[in-house]
Length: 155
Image (cartoon, rainbow, N blue to C red; front, side, top):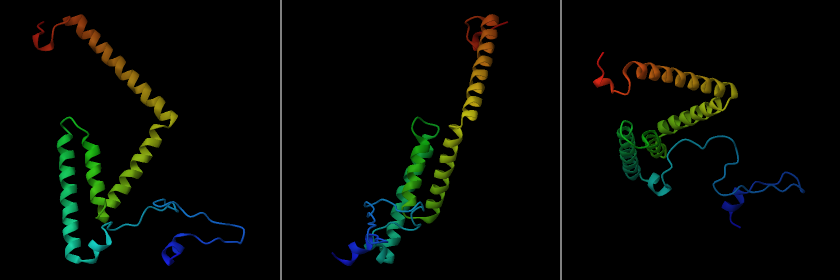
């Protein structure tokens, strides 16, 4: 065994207690990964190469975010593409990593709130009320004008 493989395995605390080594890529704590560049080491070694790497990541992320913004009014998964662009930026820029962490936390909180039974009952009640109001308005329109379109309706 080399020194590197010894560092990756936690040492047992007692003679009978053997600690299992985490699988590659598996986090051992609940803390989020460290902030900073995820560029390969050979790129981070050279300042000029690292700056050009950052410029390339920024341009790629910007292209994806702009495509997502264009998809917002047009058919397509706009928000999903915007978050993908943010994820590209987060591979290199700390500010994007912080924004992505905040977004993930807020989405998780919203999902937990949406699954709350009281909130679900309220949302169902609001939906039923809205559909009932829309049905009444449609009934009033049909009783007054019949099946004519609004732009062809005359008194």
